[in-house]
Length: 228
Image 1 (cartoon, rainbow, N blue to C red):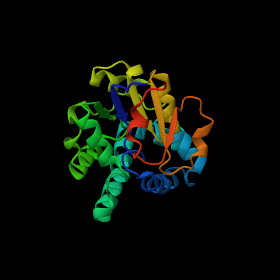
Image 2: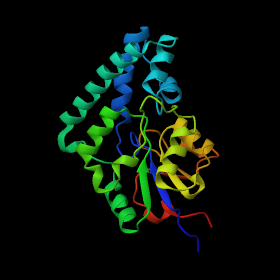
Image 3: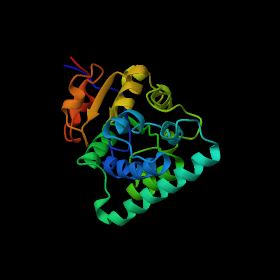
Image 4: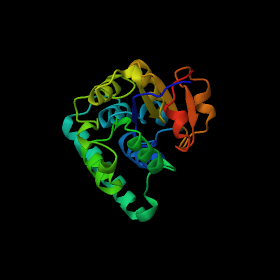
């Protein structure tokens, strides 16, 4: 019988929280403001999901912006995004079966953390709104602190595995973004699970790095189980 992986690393946006459409619409508006035309769907997949605000703004304006410009636009966009979350009220909740899966991991004493390209203000909001301290050591959450390279670079998942005290090959990563899948693969993660929160499952079927495709978290054992 196959045994289980020792740790689970979650991306957050579009993974534990199905908010990709909210971010997409916010960045469409901001990309139109920055360059005159909104990002296309393909541009969103390639240049937005899993990227830092610096990466996104640089792509949109075609040059590296000043730190002041990055901070201004990022703060404006993320503040609007958080307001939209609050306005959703009880509908702003974790992904289907996420709480059940997190409780399962906690009961089984399987290590877990989050690796997100969200900034600190958003991470603090998520921790408070979703009560993430119930399942995570919040000091182990890896986020965009201005010093970590954005996905698809492997740094964030290497850092997350280190925070758990595990080798990357002993961890499962759950991701929705193509850039995040590339990041996890480059980091040497043992198992990559693609969650189709917004995209059709067909998007992931021909990606060799993807070991499993899910639409929610109901398959507890399947997610953490090593291939036999």
